[in-house]
Length: 634
Image (tube, rainbow, N blue to C red):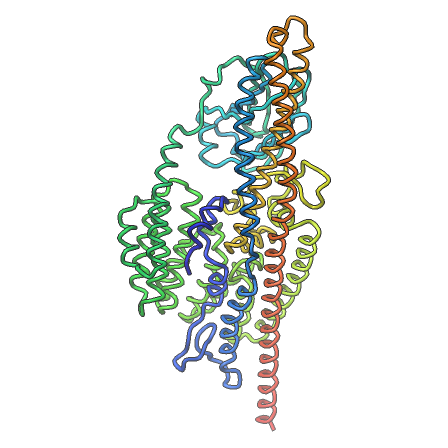
């Protein structure tokens, strides 16, 4: 039970998903089980019903544990090292081209200034919490930005964000802004605003001001031109760079500790962790160290101490969302260890500290019910499982919570309700299999990046995600996807549940990251080709204009024109390469996603088989009880 680490996680950029537990460990959490005094595996403790049904839980839970491992072992990572090498080479080439374009832009500006800058401000401090802003210039996607709590805070304190900087030819243009936000009255809003403007010679600066005032907090967007120098614009978080450098140093120490830990030297790893600053990386280090202690020690004492230290370290993380997510993981691990060591009260204490809007909540509710059932409190256990049932079946623990309801009724002596609970579980599993078949078909038709990553975010990401036609199911948009771990509003959506569960796999993380990198590369190249097209048009117009700067420096203007044309051709060639590489990268991701969906379907098949067995045993017991009652009456 340790984190994916080293090169894999450092390459992944989806917020904090490098802190995920490998998928097979999640499923093992689901099948948390224990032995009775005779060494038999049971689900909810010692059977207290008739002997003809005693021991049914034994095969059930042992099979769950085996199944969890087998299903995830089927998800063999697709080798993509050559593809990564090609992407790395292309990234180097495009970076060099981008530097040449930046240098060219400085020279072109001496001849004619084509720049346009758009700045965003909030007119009312408490009216809106921005979720995202999308910007389209003349119908072309220009910006798709998702806001963090820190960025919202900076805007509310009067900050001005440079949302967009590009190049346009002189003339009339259209700007469209799509804003999604949460108003102060807890209403989610999505608004579009159009603004027509005229680009004249020289740099154009626009301010987009957002306001939402009481009592209805309806967003209002206004645009105004202003003459403020860019140097006077308020920037984001002035201390960001120093914080990044510090984090980088802490990450290096963490990776050094991981190397020692992976080689079996937990003592050296602990010494390295002891030198680290309090915060995210030290917390992850102690969390991983606790896994070694739990695996090697007969008692969980050292592992629990390491987890308590991890909690203390995590509390010092400045990123609130990441801190909450990591705390949930640590508390779940601590609750599991306490449960397996039969300290049920301590397990309940840990698990009850996990927030109800956490990704780990369904799993925590399942384990919480197990601990309560072991204490003999079947009613409270069933309440926990009933709450877990409200989450999509894709989340760890939910499928077994449905079975737990039937077992809870059984152990409490309500056999009729137990049968109904098993039948309800069967219906839920059958319905989930229909959903999984539909998802598999959608992945085959649209690709996993569209069917899972983009569609999980719903409309806003998908809109920005299709900018170039003619490449089959592959589109070249680059919606940011850092949102999906932190966005608790969407945790109840089945598509989001499957995305989060899929992303427990390091191979899936890398595959999605690979596609996202290529998508961003495509957006950068599209922007570069557009800007170079603007330079070409502007220089030609300047050369044809009597008395212009170009007329006095014709050789320089023609050189700039030739350089612009050459770099545009190079960028278009890079863009073609990106399209081809993305098709291959999506094929890798599609295979991983299809294997994952197939494994999820097998999990539903397995759960269906177990509920049907439980129903059969229940009916058999009732039939035997009826025969015994009839014989006694005669």
